[in-house]
Length: 297
Image (cartoon, rainbow, N blue to C red; front, side, top):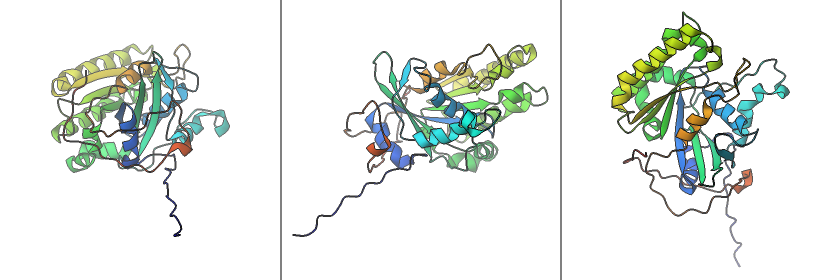
């Protein structure tokens, strides 16, 4: 009798997932693809890693943590913000060079038992967004911007707090949104959020707060009619000032991120378990239809 061949299983390393690995997740439960965009050191990794850390404390924003296929990736990005890192001040590991194909996965369960929701974050390094804003050909390479359910464009609040840098902080967001519209990466079905990070550094600074208010209104008047949705948010993931809680403003943004906007061609999938382990993974294939989408309300 011929020896039976052993079926091989490929287990992703858990740091990030490829676009192919993300397919099974998209098919197994309502899952949105979120691109967090912005220049280097504006707070992209801190935002995503900080959201994961908020669930260490318990429920947040009406959701419970229900697993992740990239736990090692989240843990590595959070390490520098913890006492165990030996640092005196919290920090976040910078995103390494990536072209948008690396994904971080977070799965949540609604506290009202309305369902399980997944989020796939595209892990892209900041310099790539600067190039995309400057060069049309670079922008067109990021096809994930067209597939994304939501794109959050970050404005560095620390720069806004500085009189000499505040204009350039918003110019970066303006340039990126404008370029993406010109290149057809954004359209009237796109969901875009302009997110001012490190808001705790601006609280009490009347001129800075007024500047932010005026700039957000200006961006809205400039682009809202060209997009499916344009909203603004003020966040403080790891505040350094007293009187403002960790994750300030994040609950509203999280609620928006759990809305799946694009119509995905799916095949029957196994029921999603509430909690996953690294050994639950198996060989996966990915086939996402990019032929059309719907502007989910």
